[in-house]
Image 1 (spheres, rainbow, N blue to C red):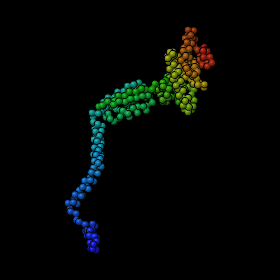
Image 2: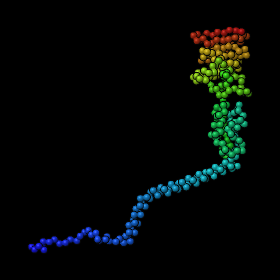
Image 3: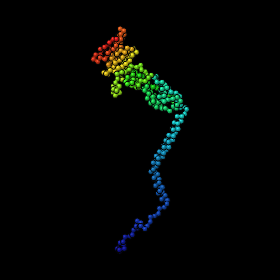
Image 4: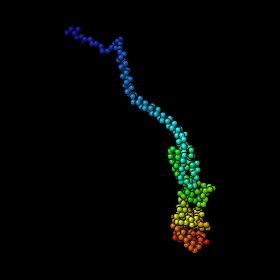
Length: 294
């Protein structure tokens, strides 16, 4: 075999030399390429664009609703159709109708939306005579007010007299023109009363319970209580009747002792006698009663 036959045939180079240039891309091919890229990008951002559009729409609708609400509010607050034409007040006895309306901030002729029921109720509960209150608005132009007033049961003598309600709460100072023909609670140390909450609660609850028991056994009209005296031991003593007879009861319970006191009065009435004092506070001998006649 000759040397020429041993030589391998030349193969065409697969790579371009530095001097050669890449083939030119036609304009149509470039257009298709960029169009596909745009479509792919648009597809990727389609969800974001949809949510952005919805958010913008919601903002526009919300702004419109707020504007419409303000226009509607302005209309109902000025329309004559919503003027207050009727206000009913129930449950008041001590407080006058005029006072209740003034406190609640309600006036005939005013727009019914000028004062909300919640605002009127809150204002009424600030009055010390009001224990409970409810206010209802009835469109187009009326209110209904229902009250429960506090009922004074006694007068508490501290540095100045205070009214005590029948639930045992001290609710206001006694002022001129207010009921003074009530039993007066005396013997209470003002400083200790304010500082000792437990003592204050126990004392007032016991005093009110005593008044309820006194009424229940039938002594209220027969022997009116002028004074309830709190003794140093924590017991109670009463001054009753026109002659202020002293009745020492001690501590609770009171009902059984008061019934015994009523029996003593019945016996003395038959003899046309009156007690100067009656002691029913013997702890060791609860059945023992000490009576001294006038």
